[in-house]
Length: 336
Image 1 (cartoon, rainbow, N blue to C red):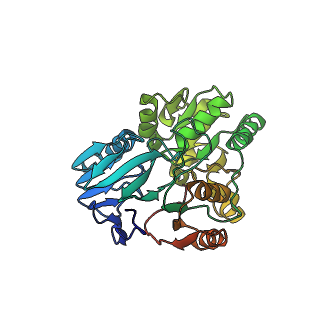
Image 2: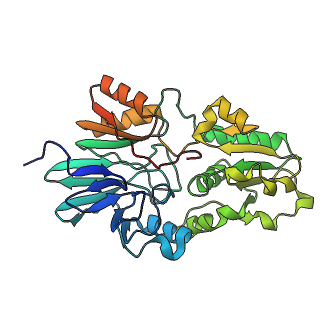
Image 3: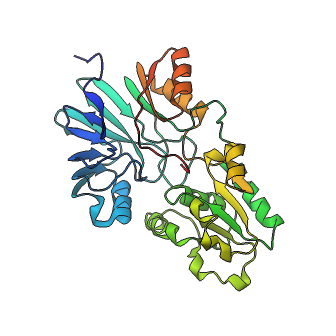
């Protein structure tokens, strides 16, 4: 007999907790057993005793956290259900970054889908998003406002290449998040026909090397330590957004500075960060894709988390869904 609700999945200070399964999803603090949607540090924290995740998620956690990534783990393949204490769990591609997953949790016929972070546009550096029918859908709302309608990522990359061609004596320092965004930008540049060596800040190298080891084609890259500053002209140099204005950036004379983020849609943020080349490329679903995803999943109930919750809850209620804010804390989205 199918349950009428999912009161067996509750919110605790550590995060979402499955009572009959005795596990957490993306816990904020170390726990005995955790299911990890993806390897961004706000979802995948160290020192859990036992974790379940995709091969890529677990291996990236190991790169980032070394021995403290967990005590024990189990690799879960996409779309291969496994059972824990009569709970059926399925990891489903989320399209967010390499290894990212939604987690479908089924108990006594009731299906609870936790999206983690997701996007629906094509990204050659990770498996594409897959929708799934469910009874309750937990959706992120990082860009859960009508003003967020992400442009074509290919068009944004054209802006970068046009600037490179126009400013042949100036290097381009482009701020990208180390995991996912960096590698996606490299892939998009190669697809756009840019074949020159692209230079990486040292903080981006380890994760990029891992992507290369997994067969992701990103062309020729080098550490900025290999860059001859006396020959510096119009190279593209990727770096963490925080490095754009720190001491490291001062060795580049008169650079054009850019940041790649969905937040570059907000003029105030561009001005605050003194950015000349804002590139609106996000690894999250925008307003329209969040609504489309919810409609396709067709849940009875929607829980909205880590983002612009109120506006999305209002719109979903207006569309006939029973929706409310989940109010999970601790998930960052500054450079998404």
